[in-house]
Length: 300
Image 1 (spheres, rainbow, N blue to C red):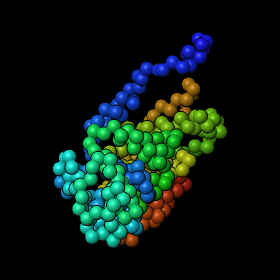
Image 2 (tube, helix red, strand yellow):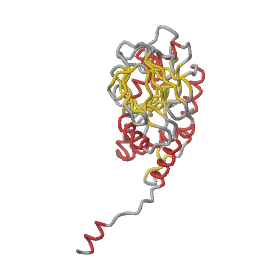
Image 3 (cartoon, rainbow, N blue to C red):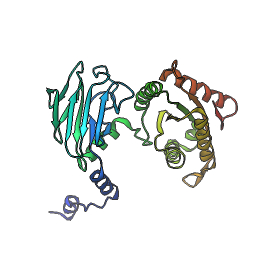
Image 4 (cartoon, rainbow, N blue to C red):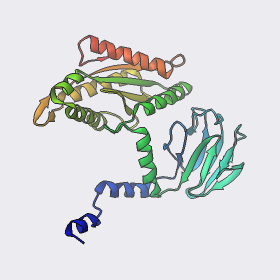
């Protein structure tokens, strides 16, 4: 065998800190249900000790906004080891491994179905979590920037608007747009544009947002931030901090400094009349106002 072939056939020693960290985090993870189909495929629902209610009602512990799921569909009782699944006289039934049940204990790895929506029961400390995290990322994350993609953001916003209205909680939305982004691509090339997009997301996530805020790429150089349980004044403050963070950052690409700024529009959902669509329209109008009146500013 030639030395070149032996070199190609050689097994590399694993030294990826990222992979090792994923394994360690999986071993510490809580028990959970992983959604296997439907709108939020791959989504993880941690299961806490005690009673957890599952259904379509936005006020429940696990909300599944799918038509085949009853408003109060099932009750889960978890003691830290075993998971008891109780059907609450749902319309379309509760199933474990495709057998309809009324009250049954689920084993690790069992498939639990509420109506037409299928979940897998993952016990605490299972390294299978790594696999499901990867699938979830493929389904829900933007490939370039690593923040959520447009489909996930729109679906999530719809469920959060319903939940916050049901519970009479505030919810705000920020729309963000990089100023003169086309000029960056035209002058410095698309690799420079990609760098700016990735660096913008990193700055927003690392330096500004709360853990509960959800950042997504709405399209091109436009992003949005969903701020559950946050009133408009908080959203405006966060948008202003994002603007200052981007403006004050030293964007360098191939030893060239890029002058980057961002415009933002913020809106808050009404208690009863707004939908996710009208909230998006309100935030987009505020963003348009910021762009039309000089850019590098926040409007609401």
